[in-house]
Image (tube, rainbow, N blue to C red; front, top):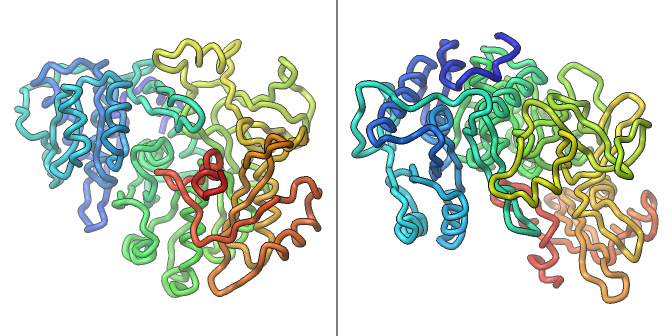
Length: 504
């Protein structure tokens, strides 16, 4: 595989490979030759309605092989924006109008919320057949042109738009070029030493950058294969692992914690697994969870650091290399630096804002000059994360700047409290978050889920914390609950958690 593929189109990369490519949970298999036919088929259908390469298409499909094929095809020819099929009508109205999209691709199971939103905004809605065809995925009622007249996206052509999470302000539109996403997929493949014989197992949503790039496109760029599940389901996970024998998985920490919770009743399947690595990204993985996973699955856990504006991956631990507990590894694609006091820091262990630049980094948000001015300077993108490099070049993240809790002038990293709580033998999950305080401005609270069959009270947990962190960092309140609320992608969102748990 050539090293610089950033100027290639997606279909050029697909055509370069042979052998099995995509599987669904029912065992349907699509090889690279037939994936090429699928992409070409959609290109010819788009030509029949005079779609232009820079038209924006919203893609609303459930997880699975049809979603994977449709994304690859649309990203090859137009600008695609995958949306969560479970959005409410108000959410669809916001995102579709904000995108100013020309049309929507969905299927026969589209929700009433999407259909009504499309009607209100007068956006054309096209449905694909649910049955994947080796001759090419068909969009209903669109004829096949004899040739494809839509240009293929390459280089700086914008092929993907994703919204930021927008926890504290209006979500921003992240524009990603073909070069951005292809270079990021190559970086991920290189770090993990993926080969054509590898088989991935996708449980991440395919409307999220993690699933699209780290799972799907990194497999395609390698010529490897991928099982496209219907989404994460802890109840079917081990059965699918037994049936498909994947060699690697990428997911978020909460998914791995759910997988661990069922490990004791699936020891036979685990013993027979082909897994050579587990990759974690999109949120900090507690060290205790990494250690538990490696003990159970007998393979390394590769923690990576990513965000949408970097087409996912920025830093990563490397396979078969030294890893440090609590670190997200070293630069694994873009150039990374620490920005402090209006300049780039040169000394190790200097804490400041993490900034990045490189081929996989977006050149700017769409229609948002204010955000572009705030987040870009001298070619660098400001991530909004606090962190530091140690003497060996390993990156340690303190947390999101907006998530840092300011308790009467004392700055507290929620991740530090999480890690301390996770060291208690009875704690399965922990998340620290900010709560309003009349005098201090902010105070600390934590939510904890206990391991099955174990009990502990708030007082004991506070005593445990007093042995490892300063008194001012100990949460005022520790809630022991059955489940921590999560976002659509399985990530725990600290901002807004106090309100969700009834503390505000």
